[in-house]
Length: 325
Picture 1 (cartoon, rainbow, N blue to C red):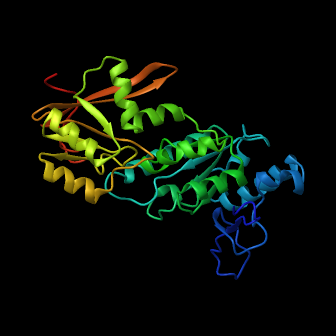
Picture 2: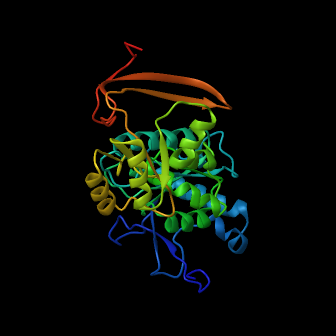
Picture 3: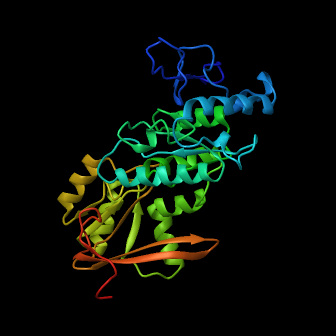
């Protein structure tokens, strides 16, 4: 409705010089309080000049803004006027389960893109991160990581692809919506992300691959959850979909605990199913982290938890390499 009415944001530069001199910075933000963009955008190619003219101006801007620090994309020997633009989504505000590790991942991704001759456009809203430093990216949008905002920026910048895999849960949650609007998601396919994040689909996948797992069932009503626990017995593990590092998961040991949790945690959602499974007490927990390429594992690590299953990885003691497997 907003776009049908012609209500669209414009891109403005953050004035770092208190209006005493013209500001040349790659710190950008969106606003509805304006009539024109402060920077040249890819979406304006058709009405404000040729691609060569656009990229020439972008190159001049990058040289002026970033010439004091790491070499900008436009000044690199291997970079051409048609350099590809890629968008990297940061982690947003720090909180339990999403912290500096995702900032390190974002910065590593940004540096790799630029070293390969590409332009890196970053969206992040956390001033505590390195990824929001002025010399890390070619353009930084200091904006919230919401579907509407990211989609607006993607339509303005028209990147060749968007990286959602280095910012943690927040960008992961945006992948499906961006994909449905035609934004190209790089790396792991959106379908694979959804299969892992959607607890029902993941449990179905394990069943189809004949991977042993505790008895489980999905539910969309509280009565269905009670019915499962009556059949399978307590303790039970309630697992919502698309949540941060196990947030909103709970082990319940009685009908009273189950009812209290479901009534107060608001985990029952029609958008994404909630899975409830039998919780195995005293189980050993093992982590396998791997990097794959074209269906083959390139590198991996197996870590053994000292504590039994049920202690979050961020609080657990891990042995690497594993000692008793």
